[in-house]
Image (cartoon, rainbow, N blue to C red; front, side, top):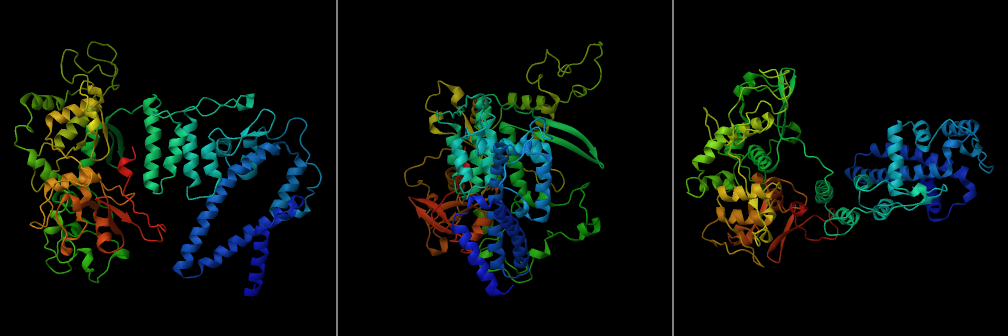
Length: 620
């Protein structure tokens, strides 16, 4: 095909799109659509052969649009099959359709005549049964697709007609082409549908949605607002929080049992299932966050080889001779790094170096050092544990030596063993703690004990909590004293109260335009007080959608130090290492509005250039 013929065909397609299609031309339209599918495959194959990144980007976007359109049309086609009774077609009609489908010759069909339907029992009992056979799906997949169609396209009425969906707002959003992935809308609709009573529209009594948020508004309205959030990560977090909170408040979500569960041995490796909640979940998240940070001593030690560890593809001799981190050659280069990367290619280079030609230790100065915070509280009367608390902790770690619950047929007296029959009811304290939970207690106690082996770098998990002022206004109702940890784990009143009694408490009061924490130009590096205040204000990296844990954060001078910026909380923002480098490289722009730092994405990401802050940590 020449370029002129392609241009003429393009004009014909443009005219077909912009003008109406006669209803009597159904067979011709089907054949044109089949030809368009074949043409699309050929055009995509031609574009794949063009080595131009601009073509690749544009092609990928068009394919994604087509994918979203196809998802919407899948559900609409299910309603079309159901409303027309396609599963009742006679065998001759289905055979003629099959031949036309295989030969892409739909014009040979006689669509002017009325369709012939089975008067008695047909081969297919339902629309889902027919769709599974006709489209090559399994029955469960076809039934699930029809169920989604009822939620988002139309409900079936008693007279065979259709009614508007129960979740009308989500249905409108689903059917309107836009930026929201149709799969996310369908997932939210399925979750909300589980909160509703069975619909009786087929009996002539269609039911409206009834699930409501704690504020009285429909859950659907809150989900629609969350789906409208432009940042996908934040939007998904908001929807997930709405659904999980409703399940928990209405008793529709059963929390799994916490503890450490042995799941057997596979290829010589013991497998365990570890489940934690509340303060213990925060301890584990803090532990993992510190271990994941390669710029801290504990993070470096966690990357060192340990006896008994396995590393497929690398021998023990190689591990002994090479201490450097193995990198993917695709992302490695012998060329010197640019100044903004903070990497010195000379012999005195350090992975902790800051930006440009700063001293090697400067990179660690602005790092949020959780170990230093904890050490600052040790030795003070308010932070030391009492002897009773230490004895209780030691009691938690006592191993009884009994088998797990459910193992064995009975005890020494011949009585059947129940789940907790290996506990002595006369013992106080934690005698009723299940074995799996005892293992978890002992595991976390060992981690935080500070035991140092030869060459070991112990990580001490740190639990930081944030309490809203309204939770402290009326202490006559202690059940309202809840909090949220640095990693976003919600703590109940009991855990919050205990941590307030045992931990070191610092206060950060937020004013309308910043915090009175300032060391001016006398010091370049941020103090621990400024870092704490910045983290309490920002709760994480300020770049929208970034979910870096607190242990991976650094403090950034909004007005750069080398440009005369002050070292103060007003001029500090929390950034992860990746986005800190992006700011200094000019890939992201930081602007100040009302004393707070906001991020401007590049125009190809945000054409409207709207300053944004990360809302991921306030999604709950």
